[in-house]
Each structure stands twice: as C-alpha cells, then as structure tokens.
Picture 1 (cartoon, rainbow over the protein chains, first blue to last red):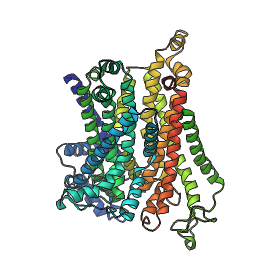
Picture 2 (picture 1 turned 30 degrees about the vertical axis):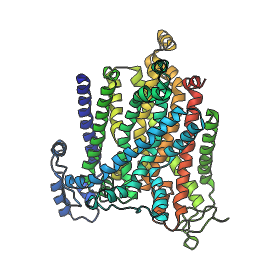
Picture 3 (picture 1 turned 90 degrees about the vertical axis):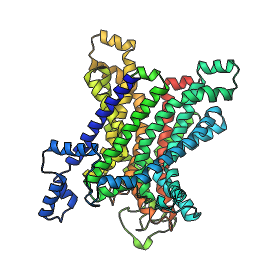
Picture 4 (picture 1 turned 135 degrees about the vertical axis):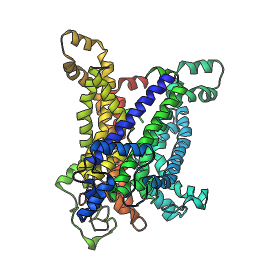
Length: 315
Length: 273
C-alpha cells in the first residue's frame, strides 16, 4: 500500500509540475506584450512599463516561472490588477460560495443517483427500469445552464419560491445561504445524477451476476440482503471513480452556473478576470482549479486502493 | 427499448438536424443577419413558424444556422481527436512499454486531470473568442479520449493469432497497425466518435453561452440562450426553443451511439442473449 501511495504521489507531483508549465506557457504565448494586453489599446507607454515592472516581466522566462510557481507554493498568488487585492484574499472570499455549491451538488447527485440506480438494477428489464433509463438519457442530454434557466423560469418567475439569482451571504444564517444555492445546485446535479445512476445500475447488474452473489443466495440470504450486503459494496468501486471525476465537472460547471445565477463564486471570478484581462487572477485561479482536481483524483485513487486490494498491484 | 429501435430513433433525430443544417446553406425561411425591428418578438405564425427574437430575426432560421455552427464545431473537434489520438494510440500499443507508450499515457492522464471547460475557457479567452478557437479547445480534449480507446483495444488485438501470423509473414509493426489493427477497431471508434460528437455539441453550447464561441452575427444555440436570458420574464419561448434543439440533437446522438454500440459490440450482443 505504501509503495502504491508513493508511486501515486510521484505522479501527482509530476502532473502538478507539467500543469503549471502548461498554464504558464498558455499565458506566455499571448501574442504581444501581456502588460499591453491587460491595459488595452489606450494605455500610455509609462503605464505599460509600470505594469511590466509589477508583473516581473523584465526577468527571464525561467526566473518568471520560478517566482510564480514558488509564490503559488507558499500561498502567494500575486496581486489582482483590477481588484488591487491579493488573489489569495479573493479566492478565500469566493471559495465560501463555490465549495458549498459543489458539495451541495455532489450530495444531491449522490442522494438521487443511489436509490434510482439501485431501483433500476433491481427491476432490470421492467417498466421502472425503462422509465429510469429513459429519464437519465434525457438528463445527460440537457445542458446544465439551460436547465438552470428553466428552473429560474418555473421556481423563481412563476412560483416565486426562490430568487432568480444573487447570494445573501452566510452572515444571515445557514438557511438563506443554502436556499440561494439550491437552484444552482439542482441544475449542476441533474446531469451528474443521471450519469451516476446509470453507472450505479450497470455496476450493480454486473456484480449481481457474480458467483459470490449466487453463493450468498444459496446460503439462504434473501435477494434484498444479498444486494445490500454483498453486491452494493462491490458495485461501489466504479461508482466512486465517477464521483471523483464529477468533482472536476462540478468545479468547471460552476463557472457557467454561477454566471446564470449571478453567484459571486470562483467561477464568476475566473470569468470576470478573463473579461477584464486580469491575467494574474486568471493564471493563479486556473492553476488552483487544476490543483484541486488533480489532488481529488489522487485521493480517489488512494481511496480505491484502500477499498480494493487488487488495485494496489496494478500500478 | 430494443437496440434497433434506439439506433433508429437516434439516427432519425440526428438526421433531422443534419438535414436542417445542410439545408441552411442553400435556404432558410428568412435572412438570419437582417434585423427587422418592426417584427420583433412576434409569436408563432405562418410567416414566422417559431416566432421572432428581440431583433425581429426568425427563430426557425436561426436554429437552422445554429445547427450548422454546432455540428461544424463538434465535427471538426472530433476530427482533431481522431486525427491525433488514433495514431498516438496505435503507436503506443505497437510499442507497448516503450518510452513513447509511457509518454502518451502519462500525457493522457494529465489532460484528463484538467477541468476541460476551464481550459477551454482559458484558451478562448487568451486567443480571443471565435468558433475556430472553440474547436481547438474542444478538440484538444478529444485527443486523449481517442488515444486511450485506440490503445486499449489495439493492445488486446496484438495478442491474437492473426496478428502473430502477420508478424511471422514479416510485416512491420506500423504496417500491422494500419492493415490489421485499425480496421478491427473502427467500430469502437465510430461509437466513441458519436459520443464525443454529442459532448462537443454540449461544450460548444456552453462556450457560446458565455460568449466565447462563435461570434455575432453567426447564430449559435448557446448565444441564443444567453440573449434570451434577459428576456426570460417576458418571452420565455426564446429561452426554451434553442435549449430543446440542443437536447434533441444531443439525445439523438447519444441514442445513436448506444444503439451502434449494442449493434457492433459482440460482447453486448452476447450478453443480451
């Protein structure tokens, strides 16, 4: 297990290194001078020179990369050009919306997908199964930002149960905050729940065909007991994989969804930074998002190895 | 649903959009770039079968041209994935365990680790929003998908007797890859291509929704939705129709992909008995 963990950790480090080089390079290859790009067409040469100095653009490529990457490692993500505050502060503020939103959506998706997938597998080939498979097929095809608009139309415009957007902040208490995040979380969760339910169903159907389930039934366990005690546990491995992958979709999906609901989270910050050409914020935020995804993938890998000893041998 | 039925429903739905997109090159009910403020926000009628938007443009015509944009972006993005991913996967499988194999697979892991939409947004933001950059941004993420599918299925083919026979006959690795491996994984690639095509349509819609895809005056489904959002209180139909188009097209492609897989993959066929 230790060897496996070490080899995954080495590959985690490598991934982060390459990712940082790629992101740095993408920003570097912007045609022309990044400082001029950020300031736009009407910038005076003095302003461009001052910004070049502030961005550290006068050093060599390698020294610029090292100072950026070194800064990231010590929690110094640079200072936003448009907001004039450290990027770390911006991220810390916005994280309190994006993280709860992603977790809320992940929880919803899992809570919906588990029973639905279980039901479809138990009623395999029946009307319930076809109904569920048809619905999830539709759920996968719906773009989450459009689903978000439909939710606004029904629950905010017509029924007036929720507000159409914005965020009241957590200082007003947990409930108003959660309420503001409910429609966005549902919009994010629907396609993910559809995928997860399908994975759950096929994983369960596969494990139900295994010999040990037959043995369990022969031993006198009811079908229900066999499913809950033996099949479910083994079916969880592929389901865990998908849950891990979904974290990255939820983070990325949040960029779009936060824009639909005008939520001041990380996604909206990335997007605003892009439109304001605030490259310092863009570069550091994208790196942080990639970092989060790579680390989650690493943790999921370790989690499987802990659950399933067979995976440790296959490095 | 029987796999045959799934395939035909899917293919039928996809064909409707493909035909509408092709037809839009030659004819649309109205000119999609002409603004006609006098006829703005008209309901459905004989002149405007699906009504008009806030500039008086015909919705049906815009949906037809929008289908063209979506299909073009997604199709070229799949082309990039196949064009780069399949040769990489074949080479990696032919030289299993080599440095090349290792580099290809690690590179793939890395691209998979990137939140694709974030990077697509970064690319289009840095290089400027355009349909071309959207294609590139979506296409890059198709490369590892095709490389992985190709490598995985090619590896199992390399252990088969007829490949051994070809090696005994003196054929090189490259020639075996092209003459024997590739034709036998085409089915799988077609299925994967259909799936990536539908994902590409969703990605294009998302990018153009945030203004990073095809630029005005080229109509695109995502931007139609973005424009409709401000009018959702007064004209909800504008926000519903482009969304339905996306759902129908993606659903059609997914059903077709599933149907094709069931039809072409002998393992699934056997499992169904």
